[in-house]
Amino acid sequence: MSSNTNPSSSNQLAVVFDMDGVIADTNPFHAKAFERFFDKYQVAYSQEAFEKHMYGKHNSYIMQHFFGRKMSSDEIKKLEAEKEGLFREIYKSIATPVNGLVTFLEDLKRNNFKLGVATSAPKANMDLVLDALNIRSFFDSTLSSEDVILHKPHPEVYLKSAEVLSVSVEDVMVFEDSFSGVTAGLSAGMSVTGVLTSHSKDELPPCAAYIRDYRDTNASTIKSLLKK
Image (tube, rainbow, N blue to C red; front, side, top):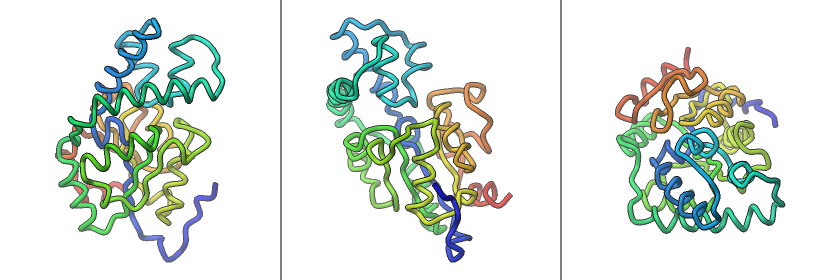
């Protein structure tokens, strides 16, 4: 996919957010949904296994890893629909943004950033989070697992986001919390800020910056990081 930029948009800066663990700290609730789901199917799991093989991974990988066998795409889709339905049921009434997110989104908009969401989660999950948090109007691009063929750590979702936003990859700051997500952003040629909700600095590839939450950053910081 081309990352060439329309010359008229060469100075346009953008921020693209992963969703789980970045917009909302959903990972503990995904873990609860997977626990309930795996208990039903008598599949073994542990918190350590979730950290290595669930956070930031696509369901096609997760299902085959934990069930320990190859699956057809139809079987994966069926199991995914069941598990994600459990997640939405658990999460819909308690959805909350990562601390400082809304203030940060407002700051970015005031400073004319284009904003996007690029998640490996299904569209139904993305819609639930964006609408429950009432933040959809901030975003110029919202891409979910249905919008790409190749999932993180492949950079497709980030390259496609740059295309939809009409920005150059070097003018994009990605916010990610997982190893595969950071790898995807870096592979797209973008700068990445690591969000330390799910992992420590040492567990992520080297990032341009790290935050615990959005009280640790602002639009001027992102501008300075992108202008280096």
